[in-house]
Image: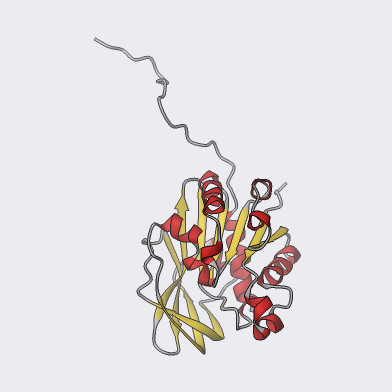
Length: 243
């Protein structure tokens, strides 16, 4: 019998309250749009936002989270370092982390990557085509050779991230740029997936294939039941024969 994966969607929830265009697209917030879809496909869902106490990421909430989805943009600096350290430890202990779009600049992603995570960008409503470069990976189950998004923000190389453990998607943009848009990482016992699409002024999080990728990523990133490694001074398993 399979266990239901517990997912928490974290969102700044600032653009939706301050920008009419974003509010009209996501009247209850990006977090609600994602959580509504994921609940329908069988996940146990929670949401959390920046302005809640402890940003909604209390120890109790994280203890009941198998996979954390993170969307942030304009208020990365407002996330408390104490909460970042808490989330980082949970990832190292085995919690999955899905980092979406502009959360490449989030404190938690930069902490786990150890680099600036900087890139080129342009908001011009151009076509994006995300090519699957790792066919057969669980994250692209049910996805064809590519995903096409009619209007999106451009992100371009060089993307200052560590070499991905697995490169899943490479994007091409109408203006000519390319970008590593789907990257997996393993940190401690945790699995991380960075997925590029999702600018707040476009309806990307209603795109069926984008949602399917996020669904697949949640299943892939969920903790695996295994024996945790032992560290420190260790007694030998076999007798030591000394001369």
